[in-house]
Length: 339
Image 1 (spheres, rainbow, N blue to C red):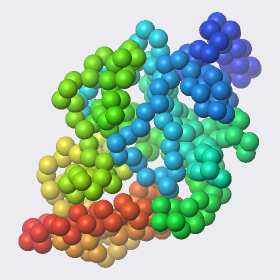
Image 2 (image 1 turned 90 degrees about the vertical axis):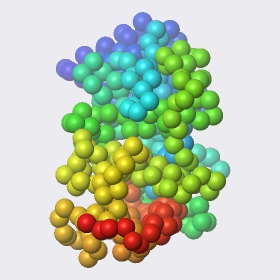
Image 3 (image 1 turned 90 degrees about the horizontal axis):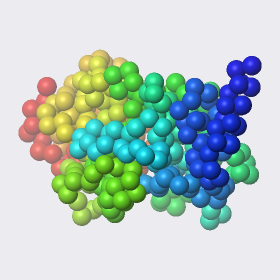
């Protein structure tokens, strides 16, 4: 009966809106729509043609997800604006949605595998995973997650075959939880501040302001940027959503936010709070000047589920990311005190 009532609600909401409008009731209501198309984020779902106020964006440095390509979109309802914040995520109003589709190039075309939604409801953010059908015409809600066999070619030209993991709804919370509440990860000014993205959001009436001194992170693979800036940006986007005082790894004492200045909290010369397989017999999270003696590198180079970091969303080693962090650690003077 509840499912029928939810379907009726969505149908009525769709009728109330104009053709091509996003179905705001699907975002703000209590129901969990079964199909991605129920939201109306795209006027042509398969062709990925966004509806009004659904805006594509990308991040200066992105989270690694098994070399998957990601197509990101932000929706802010009409008459509403996100509020700029120089440090935290943009404050998005109720009715907003963050839409992120993961996929791989196949025969020269992007083949979508899953779309993850973050819906801003009055009760807070809700995370939902949708899995695409083989035809690429629709994606269905898959709260329990799933695995999809995938073959792709990595940046080195090597073929890869993996069991791609679509997270279940609870696993979404593992990465997005901040003090127990779900929060966006990448929707921060410093990740959006490139190619005029913030200014475009202001011009579209979706963001309240874009200060000229808005922060900006380094692009992790831009060799023109300082190695430390690139390494810190990489660690923040890939690790700091858990490794912060309010995150899931708060008890580790390893905090990797970009603003963190204490070298020991960043892992430099820091001993782990508990010895175990995850350390690989190494003494320090980051052993200055010695990547091979660093737990951070050991865990990034592992695909063992009991060792690998990050714990979720990775079945392969990000060889290029590891090379970056190896170079950064090797550049540190070995004379730093280890604690």
